[in-house]
Structure formats: C-alpha cells, structure tokens
Image (spheres, rainbow, N blue to C red):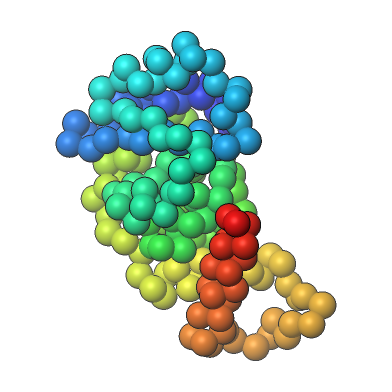
Length: 171
C-alpha cells in the first residue's frame, strides 16, 4: 500500500519509536515546497521528532541511525548498502536486501520497529547478496557478462563509481 497521509504516518512512526530515540524527518528536496507551515509545525511539535532541512546531506543521518524509515526512496538503498535496518512504506526494487522490511499495515509498525531495533546490522555477505539480486534486475547489460560471479574488487569498483556519481551530482 501507499501511505498517502504522510502526516499520519509520521505521527504513527513517532509513537512507535522508543522514548530513548529521536525521529528525524527530512522531506525530499523535490517535495519540500508541498509541505505547509501548519504541517511542519504539527510535525515539529511531536515529542522526539526533529525536522531536517530538505537539502541537508543524509550521510551522517544514515551512519548514525539505529533504524531508517523510507517511503520508497533511495535512502532505503543507501541504508541497506550500509547494513542498516530499513522500514519501507511501499514496495521497492530493494526488497531483496535482508535488512529491509515492508510495512503492510500501520498497526504493525510498533512491532516492526521493536524487531528491527533488536536485530543487528546486516552482515557483509547479506549486503552483497542483496546487491547482487538488485543488480540482476538490470542484467544482462549490453557489455556485461552476468554469468560471472562478482568479486570483492568488482563490488569495490562499483561502490567507487557510485561515490563519484554522487559527488558529480552534488556539485
């Protein structure tokens, strides 16, 4: 399902996290203008909920997060690639990562949050397995031999490529 009432979804998320945690809400930079001041004020008044500017870099948030929530965005992929537990509010192409959980019913969110907070980071092999399954969705490519098993150097080179792409997009 697609959770169209984002304010309600955020309220449920805020009630689902333990009081020892904070929830940082960062709107997508393309969607930032669609939020009214009234909605932003309602969100900022929730206990342990903080609003981040839409243009802020998310790397520190991801690195320091115990759990990541995502509607369906690339932050889910970024979290999964770092072994972080991610709860997504819709089907994604990242479903093959072991650290990704899909919410089907908001009533299940408190249990899903507890379960995900109790489980540790995904192992390197789990991350690699999820990435391999994701990449298989794009293959066979025009010049790639997808029957060849990925080696550690191939994955490292791919990560370097993505980092360079990200830097070029940020400049």
